[in-house]
Amino acid sequence: MTNNDKRYSKQLLGKTIVSKTGRRFGELGNLHFETKTGELLQLELKNPTSLANGLDLERDEEGNILIPYSAVIAIGDFVVVSEEDII
Image (cartoon, rainbow, N blue to C red; front, side, top):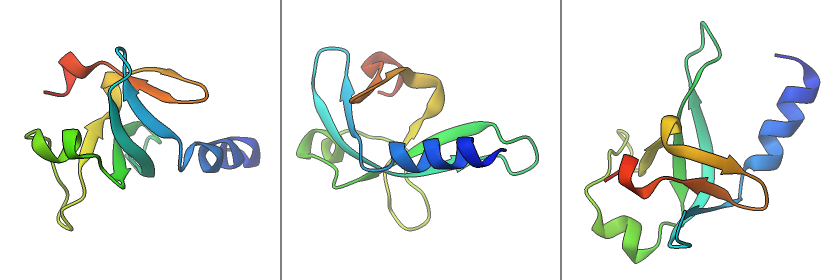
């Protein structure tokens, strides 16, 4: 991973995570990745909304809600995820 990649990943933190239809899940709190390959695995939610809390989403050992990276459709001003892929 180059320095440019590291700066970019830090720019993602705090972005709002929404569905294709605009339903808000919370903010990106952390990225979980495979250390050997660098493959992104999951997004950790920070400040989850009541919508996110009400869904039966995977959680880590600290109770943080996790969204699989495979559900990400687009990253720009928001992180857009496919709601069908996470519920």
